[in-house]
Image (cartoon, rainbow, N blue to C red; front, top):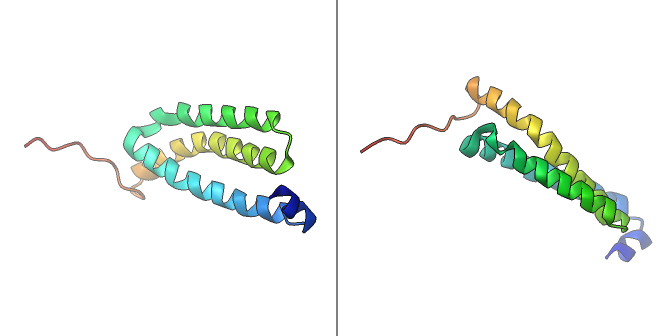
Amino acid sequence: MTDFLAHYNLTGLAIGIATFLIIGVFHPLVIKGEYYFGVKCWWVFLLMGLGAVAASIAVHEILWSTLLAVWGASSFWSIGELYEQRKRVSKGWFPKRGEKKKS
C-alpha cells in the first residue's frame, strides 16, 4: 500500500485524510470520557500518547510513523480538552451526567 501511495505521490494526501479522521475520533472520546468518568480518565490519554509516540519512534515506515505521531499528539491534546470539556459542561453547553435515581 505504501508503495502505491509513494508511486502516485499520494502519501501526503493519505496522511492528511488520516489525520482528519484521527482528530475526528478523539472529539467524541473526550466528550464521552468526561461525561462518564470526568477528568479522572486523563491518564488513559497520557498512556495512549506515550505508547503512540514510542511506537512512532520505533517504526521506520514514514506513513505509519507519522500517523502514530499524530495519534500520540491527539492523545496529549485530549488531556487539555478534558478539562476544557468540564468547563463547557459547567456552562451548560453539554449535558451533565446526573445522579442515579433511587427507586
